[in-house]
Image (cartoon, rainbow, N blue to C red; front, side):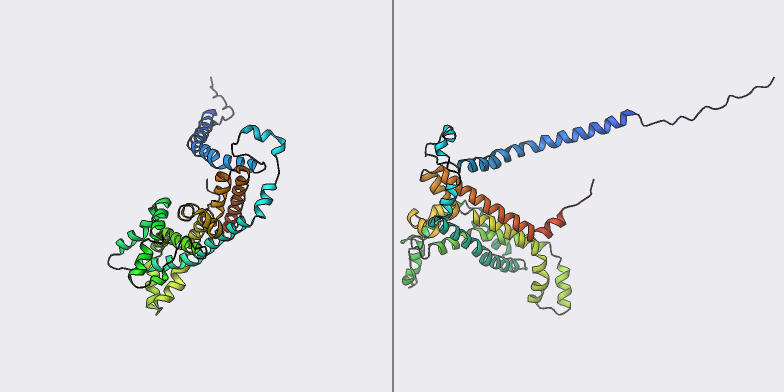
Length: 331
């Protein structure tokens, strides 16, 4: 009797099954929930304290609102005036002066503070005795609150303050002035105070950028016979470009928002003539002059100017830096 082995049936391939797919989907869902959990507090704060005020200011700017504002005023068709607040602001000589003063501070900050900060940073980047002490002293004004710094300078620059008294003590009494009350020099004085206050941040920012430049490049250039100035001009400053562009962006945005120092140090009568900025004019008209709708229009104009400048600067000045910081196709 012959036994015949049964023929093998069709081969069966084991599939991955639904369990691994469900686990992968569960991991993705859990990751999205974790991201939402960590992002939602910051997103809610951003929406509540940035986006919502901007939207409300845009709505208020279309109305002629009384000082005692109520929500029912927005439903009153007689108070809706459209863009009249904007046309009034742009044709107002005081607001035009505020715009001019703001851009004078902005341009002067870039032209004056930048070169001084770079020069001091290059000096402090070299080995010298007491370098840490100088760095600390330079940064101290920046950490002071604006109100404290403004009140201090207001006392120093008063007619009987330390500045005029020091000039008289050394025989230069003819140079004594009413620094913060003379319309011809008040804006210049404010700019000097702002420079004293914020140049320490620029110096430390440039020092941080200089730390990222390899010493070997300067040493190699020295061996090739390059002078100190040639090394700074052809090696240090080009490699410091990204830091310089970031500082310029921060300086531009900060200059557009100058408020505390001007508001604290200069009297309202002088401020209206010579030192008014867009931010101080906005607060003066919206809060103290009892015109919340008009003040909201000023706020929207300031926001639009800042946004346009930021977008243009990012598009043309920061494009190289941002392009190098973004990694595409990484999963």
